[in-house]
View 1 (tube, rainbow, N blue to C red):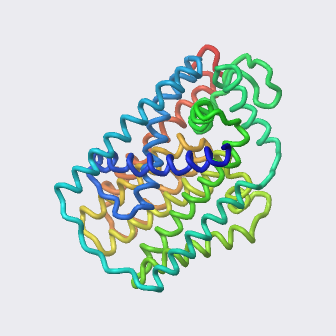
View 2: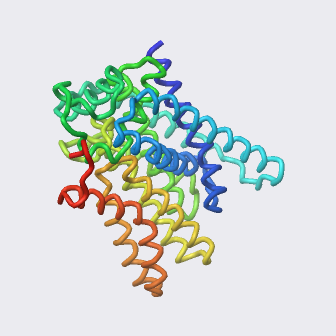
Length: 363
């Protein structure tokens, strides 16, 4: 039953992300044209929303069962709204015809799906145990055992005098702990059998999208090829701090998602911005920047490791766009909007470190 629960949780998560994308699409007035793109940006929208709910509860030291009760209800409402929007689109709009898939495309798609599934299984069976394993899994287990959030040390299990601000500002681990509680799963099982395979799947989707967008002909074949190359290179290049290590072995950590989902997604959005500048009009450029905004605003909710690295990536893109297209004020304004949430988090974090902002019980 435990493996089945894990598979169901992964598939249910992908479905919820897909449904969330319809809501996000309606709010931002943009369009996600491929299923991997929908799942990816639905994932970001999901974690940003969880951040808005979880962080205040963590800082106010509310019991974990309150978050565990509220979040599934919120998830259900958003998913239902996404389903309604999807059905409304089916009724109102005619589906654009697409070219029939050739035998080569079907074979490549089947092969890359099998490769991704194999990579996900491979990641799930890695029995890595390190200092971070002890702390992060211990934090999740402490939450399940004590009905508190970040009030007990992940390594020792002893009560903490204060909540560490560094961990309290991101809801990544608490989100997965919510579903561990409802499914009766241990933190170790969820981390290894759910969080890691999900990281592999999302990372592979980004690789597919990059290959798809950059291919001038045979786009789906290009997506399959880039995905295969990404997974093979990651598999054979796994040193201690490589992206392959954080994909297959330490993918249960938030920094694993930073390396393999958040930053690659920002790169994908940057590719879309540059392609829109080259081939599209103003509307396509705005849509591409909206993708960049979603990925960047959700970077901290997914991983505190992206607090500075995500804005740095946006800044590099801004310089390229200004050199390529001119209009520095417009570009700077769009880039600042994209990194606004990160700048807010950085400001609060630094002010707390300097003891300018004093929050009782927060260190």
